[in-house]
Length: 333
Image 1: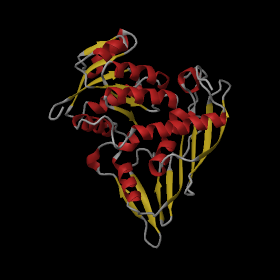
Image 2: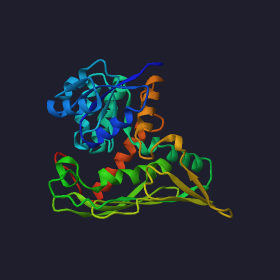
Image 3: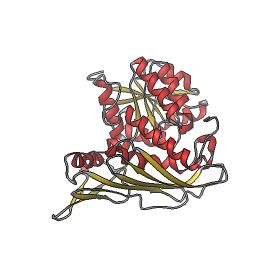
């Protein structure tokens, strides 16, 4: 694919799909050739909105379209396994929204499909591709704050939604953890890897999903992380990473920061700010660009968002749900 446009298919037509597509059209080497929904009308409306040539009223037609290089899956996460699996089985490369699936079993099935077929698969964890998060990780990897000892990260909002809303619907994988908690968990594991132990508590709704969840993660080297998520109250949505020789504080929006502050023992605080050339801090273009870079390089996964890392995060989310007693329809065990 070197030297040519990457041809995209968009599977789903909701808000997330629209946000991604709006950012994708700004990339000169990206070409959006088709969109699909479960019925023709929303697909046609989406295609007209973004000037997309083909609109399919079913997922199968998009998956079979051989003029598509990669499909972006933006369905509710309860449908990720089905939608992404359909595309992989048809030979399409896939960028799948977070959380990757409902549970690690489904995630492992998708990873197995992609690896068996030699196809590219990546979770759309845009935080990992964000320039400021990459800069923060590089500083930590270079020893700027010494050995990481503690991490704190939270993401909460006052959703004020009814019981029928997807955030509270068990059939759609509702609850704070999978929708919002995936960010603090993923941030923590970006820096520390998979924890060796998990303790968690949650407030559950009448429908059986978590309204807010707090977890304490620990590692065999002594590191500890506290993560929190909520759909019943707005939090600072900040993060802090403390090491043996300093600390990094990230203010509101830690997963798409425009700045962070480095505190090194015995030195003045140092602020790092985003490069205006990188564009809007909330742009999804960085994950799209990384997917296209990997495809052109013939890679089947991104080193920024490795599949083993995605599986590790899903294992942690599964463990937290087990600890707090959240199970979705169809899950066993």
